Length: 409
Image 1 (cartoon, rainbow, N blue to C red):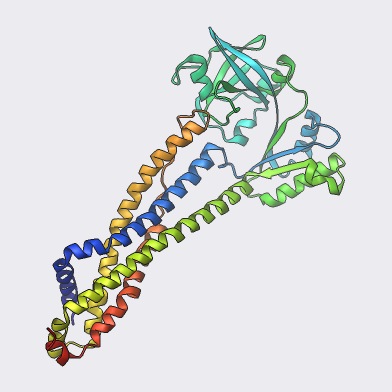
Image 2 (cartoon, one colour):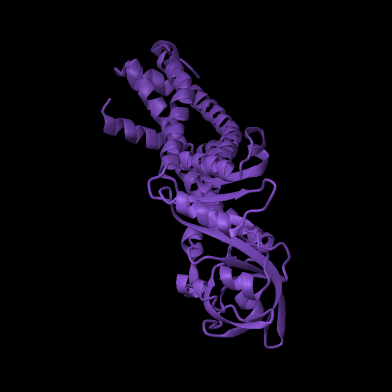
């Protein structure tokens, strides 16, 4: 039988049982839609988490050490000098709590004192202005970079022009030089976060003299695991930390390792979702087999007539097998479209939930990731289901005796 004739007969057979065909493919539609929706949504959640929590800086290293004493700025300067072959930039972080005043508006704030390199290390995204410079750090300049949430809280307008405006922190007036996207939550909705030069924070705001955290940006192409090991060894040697105390006294974490842990966690969750969706596909496949067996029973006389006119077993097998594959492919196409639609709907719902959870951050956004590999996998699954569950009915039809089939009532 020619391919064109085989295709024509397949379409005619499916059209003759249109209602039954639609009901039969529902299991396939649901299974494929679940696979596509979960894959797209999980990919979108991963990307959103990376952007939301600053994990896109895979070269960033967070470090800290406490053994008999806190880290000081002298320790950080020594680290920056001796580890310059491994790091492009290193910044200490200190901080204090102050009241920020703009006009009649007063807000409790977490004030971070950092170096100018902090912007590059944290990959800060600016909505207005710039970060402070090295010269401003050296001169103890009264400049401040605020977050978008602080802009809204202090100026009662998320679109207000803040650059050049004066805000009162502690006992001094500071000039806003930049506005960045939200990077953190202090833990209470009525608190805000602002960044000032490290020297200014120490000298003018009576910040903690000790360093609360240190961030480094590894050089391009560095092996992050090796960087972490070198840094840990340097800190252990510099602070004279015994071998058995290192795990509890030294903290070195790379963003690359966090991303890998995130991928492992998401991969496990994705595998679980695929396992659940496979149950629906199995049910759909059984439905396909049931329909094809019914079709064989209803078309016994037709099969006998075809054989009497010279049709071979392979022709009969091919026809019924193609019908099963076409059914699953139709279900797969519909499932892919439904899956992407469901992914965007769920993303809107999840995005709203994340926005509410992250300190009222209305900028939280989840965009489903369309993975062509998932689409190709879904298509292959559909073809596989059609072949596996359609083969037995097709072979049963092909083995029918033509004489007995023509006499069948």
